[in-house]
Image 1 (cartoon, helix red, strand yellow):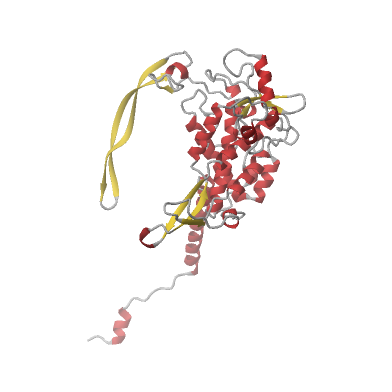
Image 2 (cartoon, rainbow, N blue to C red; image 1 turned 45 degrees about the vertical axis):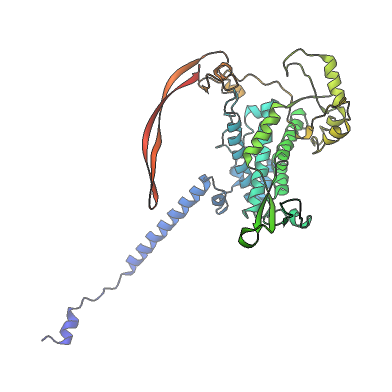
Length: 431
């Protein structure tokens, strides 16, 4: 029988790790950690998530192209709010492309990959399309910042405090059977969003000419489109789902609603002209802006009609029309509106001062992509039809083949399995 000492000799003893090996392993681990951190920083720079941008030092105001000196200073003071504003600009361009996808001008010259769009030639003109871009951009900044405030993403703002300090509990009218309700929750801070949108975008307009004044007015019209579509959401409280008491808060509307509102105002945009006194006055008829014969006597009557409500667009301060400026004319019929005629609320209308081109032919110098190669709807008689969209050049009928997912099945648990199906269709494309 072997002795206990002999068994101890047979046991393998652990060898001590040399210090050089420990240092090598720590160096590899540290290098791997640095690579992962650098990879995350790059992802944050390229990410579309506001959370990723705010969780790192990716907000570099000096690296954002197209910002003015005032905008850079504002960015340095509020870098997190500037990120939310940039996301709002990208959302606005996406909505612009959706609203005009079947128009000759489809907002294609403005891309969501570019932070600022003011280098575009289109935004240096006075077209009604230019007015829409300024309005939707201003609305996008106000919308995005207001939501970011209520979600706790920004350090300089939070929920809208006016909902709780200025309004008491209400009852009776808001629900069936006299359901009581009160302001609560976290209302979107639209006031802060509109203020930052004004500081961030209106800072570019300092020239004091007709273009700057019209741009300032359209910026405010875009913000008014968000404010006029604010929604109230409520949550019921009570036993077994009964709505004995409701807590309500205000939220900004879905941005698609804002886009549709501004699209309607784009169709009814008001032409303006600069007077010798430095004011911008809306015209009811202006040569070249509308179809039909130009009648100077009707122009004079239209100018007298809008004199009281429109002469307040001062060139010196670029203030534009204040909200509610047209309400007084609507109620009192002032400004020579005539019997039973209502004057437009010009504070919410879009202004333009140049006739738009037809956008048919490609012109890189004017930032016009043209309609050649665009898909059109052959049987349609509207703006998306081939007769209108192709500008009389005709169209080609081509066969398009695409692959899409089909026959999807859900498997427990938990994934979806799909097949790839090839779909062929005939489409019409403008020549």
